[in-house]
Amino acid sequence: MSSNTVPLSEASPPFNKPSSTPSVDNFLPTADVILRSRDGTDFYLHKAILSSCSQAFAAMLNGTDSVFAVVKDGAMPIIPLEEDAATLDNLFRICYPLPDPDFKDAQMIYNVLEASRKYIIEHASQFCRQALVSLDVLNKDPFSAYTISCYFGLEEEARKAARHSLHHAFEPGESMHPVAIERLGGEAVFSLLKYRAECKSAVQRLINDTDYWLDNVQVNAEDNLLYICSDCAPHRAQHVEEPSDLLVLKLDDSIFHRVTNKVLSKEPCYIPRNDTAWVLTGLVLFEMDSKGWPCLSCREEVLRTVHGFFAGRVFHDIEKSILHVALDWRHAA
Image (cartoon, rainbow, N blue to C red; front, side):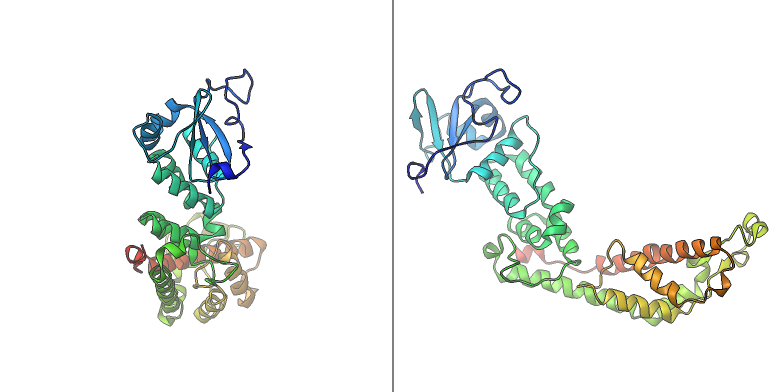
């Protein structure tokens, strides 16, 4: 759409003023160029700043790039651009000595990243890459973070997004349409679904291996499930020389097996969340015989010990089991 067919609007400060009025919201020198968005917003900008951060802008503003039309508004040139006002506003805030935009929306990151690639603004590209794998974005929309990463060929970001997606159900539809998915085709979805399925299978094999629980809960209990109670046995707590001097939890490994499988089966890919260790600890302790814990200190120490076993040993082993799962992100791109 031509910029002449849409009503003109004012940009957000400090891009809405042509001159350096001495005020807190406009401390920059006099603007010497106007960049107009496709939806009719005029940004009063500075050739020196734009040229220093972008080769494309430098060529455009020096008149060596004939692709961009230049319209005169008195003494100040106006250059229409294809991007909308929101995208340009965020892009210029990254370029200028201003507070950086707070990206929490994958679509906006995609728009700004596309513009930063188009205008060759490396700093803006790096900023968008970091925002793409921020917890705000990954927790809200890991699938869009993955498809955007694949589209732009960002391997590290694609792997982080795919890993984070394991906490989320993949239910495509009107309410979930990953950004840039139409630019990639079916290969992107297939690669991610294959990765998720193989991660889930790897975890299932681990937690359904009865020998794993036997080894860690019974055979190697002294390494994983032992504690000292200074209230019940103060002398023992001060003179621990052998593992046999420690109080070992008398547990049935089948309890750990059954409870872990039950809880993780409710997760999309059997991957534990931040609070899963406490959930598992509570369910395991519910089935344990508490007669062997004669005091409050015992109970508190058992709670910490079982939680540490899940958060440390079990979850570490789960993470190891999926580290070797391949992600064919290049095929997706």
